[in-house]
Image (cartoon, rainbow, N blue to C red; front, side, top):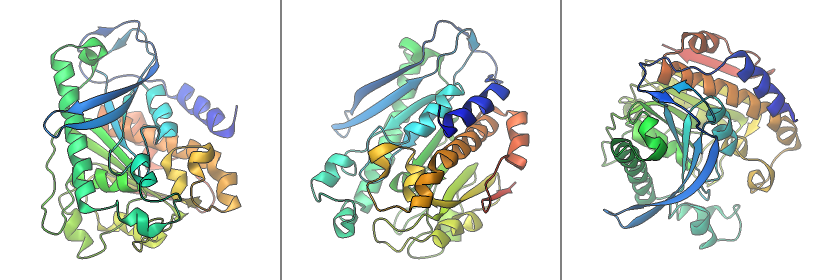
Length: 332
């Protein structure tokens, strides 16, 4: 068992999963499973591949909370698998969304390498961001529809008060669904989303970050690292990523900055999927430790903000253990 698994096993055994909201019914014989499906948005005639993670929890009281994950540019529904495993272990239903047009297939259509920043930028467009935002809205609609129809296990989920997380371009997607403004677009108002986690976000290239973020009133956790640099070539730096937290309005906001963590640390993947851009040896050495730390803190974030878990909220006041040089900030 690697460092991340050991850390998670100890953490999760010390904080057993429980749902604090009013019971919707008794859930029995729910087996943990990972299911890949292709959902189709008839309005846009668009395929939306998803990976579903169902928790293995017998005799739980529902409804089950849901978390959605949005991958970065060139990713797939396999993105965020490390985070998804941690969250499903804690009893959350996790939906990994793949965004056609800014996924791995799209990148392979314009370049053979993730170091070709010019080609990558051709896919990181406002049009693709809008398509991603509509993907998330469509997934929320599907959750609501399947719940209403009492379809299979969907009858046991909670279709509102959903969490949304995303990495890199997925962080832009997350911030956009949380209400970020853009030039010529006032942003999205999506009441079914209750809490957010942005992995590797950055402040806007132009204009005031405070104005862009002023509608982000719901809980939001920003996560970055001291080596979380520019991958696409738009001027993102660790400093600009850290500046997101300072520009956010008050109201349940937090920031985690990991020493020596880089951009791919936060994609939530291991092996070759985490090695698509050059990395420092120190980052590779710390990756398992970083993954365990992020898994624990983000799980507590969902518990605190989606389930009103007072013990998780207390742990978030001073997460332990943090590494040497790590930064944790929280603003109520």
